[in-house]
Length: 335
Ligand code: ADE
Ligand code: ZN
Image (cartoon, rainbow, N blue to C red; front, top):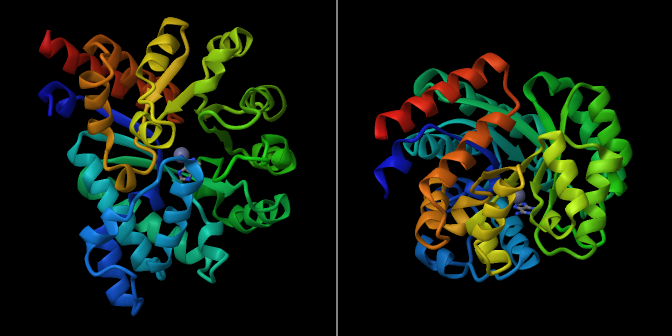
C-alpha cells in the first residue's frame, strides 16, 4: 500500500454496514445463532461471490444478512467495520443501514439501531472516530413500507443525519418515494439517493433527484456525465457524488477512473467510497490504490477526491475545517 494514501486522513460517505459483513463474522454469528450456512468454511462462502451486476450482487448481499439477529450482532458488525476503517485512517464516516432488510424478517428496528449506535459510541471513545448514520429505504419495496419505516424511525431521529435510497433501481424511480423524502426533509434530515451506474432511465432518475427530490448528495451518479445540463447543476449546487470505483468494477466492469477525472475537471465534487467492502474485497485505501495503480489517477487527483469527501460531508463547519487542516498538513509534510 502506498504510504501516503495509508496515512492520509480520510472520510467515507458511502458504505452499507450490511456490506461490511466479512465471511469470518458470518460464520461466527451463524454458529452463535444456530443457523446453518450452505458452505463449509468462510473461504468457500467467499468463493461463491460470483456477482457481475447489481441484481446478482444484491441477491447474495440480502441472503447473507440472516445471520444478523440480535443487538450484539449489529454491534459486532459495525464495530468490526469501524476498527478496520480507522486502521486505514478513515477519521470520519457516514454509515448506511437498511432497516427493512431486518424488520421484514422479524428483527426489531430498535435491535438494529441500538447495536449500531453502541458501536458508534465506542468508536468515538476508543478510536477517536466520528460517525453519523443514514437510514436507507429499499426502493424495490413499496413507498408505503418506506413511509412506515420512516415513521418508526422518527423517535430515533436524533441518531440519524439523513435518509437514503438503495437496492434495485430498475423500475423504481426516485419519484416513487417523493412523499417519504418530503417528510424526511420536514423532519430535518438530509437527503441522498442512489443513482446506480448504467441503470435503465438513469438520466431521468438523476433529473428527478435534482429537480423533484432536491437531494443534498447523490450516491454514484456516474451517468450524469452524459448530460452537460445535469453536470452544470451538480457543479453549481456543489453537490457531492459518492462514487465507488471497485464496486463499479464488479457491477459494470469499469473502475470509472476516467469518469472521476472528468468530474473533477468539470468542478463536480466527486468522492471515493467503498460501498460494500466485504463483498468487493476493497475498503477505502484499496479503492484509492486501485485508482492510482489501475486507473492512472495522479496523487493530486486522489488528494482532491479525498478533500471533496470532507467538503461535502454532513458535519459542522468547525469539524470540516479541522479535517481539512489535517489533510493539508499531511499533504504539506509529504511535499
Ligand atoms: N445496497 C448495497 N449496496 C448497494 C448498491 N451499490 N446499490 C444499490 N443498493 C445497494
Ligand atoms: Zn451503495
